[in-house]
Image (tube, rainbow, N blue to C red; front, side, top):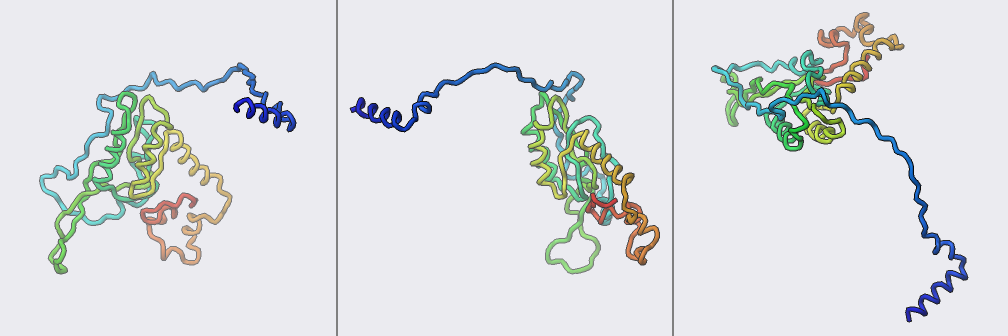
Length: 254
């Protein structure tokens, strides 16, 4: 029976000119040279004694807690501190203002510490522990009666401030998935940057200002008080040339 099937199969192949297809099972092996990229040199990298992110206190250690006003200027405008790398090579930078709760900091700490290799990687905070008091009154209370009791503490963050930085004997491709996962969960827009990309981002903004060909800039319009625009602008807008609207950042504004 098997011989008959084989005879029929080869007969069909012989009549349909498929002999070349059935007999072309030989593979030609060729040898060649492949060039690989030279791995980076991490001989000068020194890991700290405690490479993981440390635990941040939920409540500051004050002898007497004082209530504060809202002070929305804490999250408006560009960051003047912690806007450049100190020891790390990669990190998360805030692209807008906002407040970080203690739960956000625990999410950052646990996500990075669990998925990093302490033998080759280190991470450090670039923000402070929660220190700004937020007051709240209980349900069912009448209006008045003074300011409520302190409910919890927050950390204000301005645009351009680094949240956390990571370094060590690693490359960006190794830590980018973890940092991207953390950046998506933050209460304000944030992105993963390296030391080179952060410098390029700042250089790009400076080049836009120097090579701008549009004469109708926000600075000129506001300074000349065209159409009486000064009556609707605040000193904050004049100082930052309209790049920041409250806690939001306008990257296209020159």
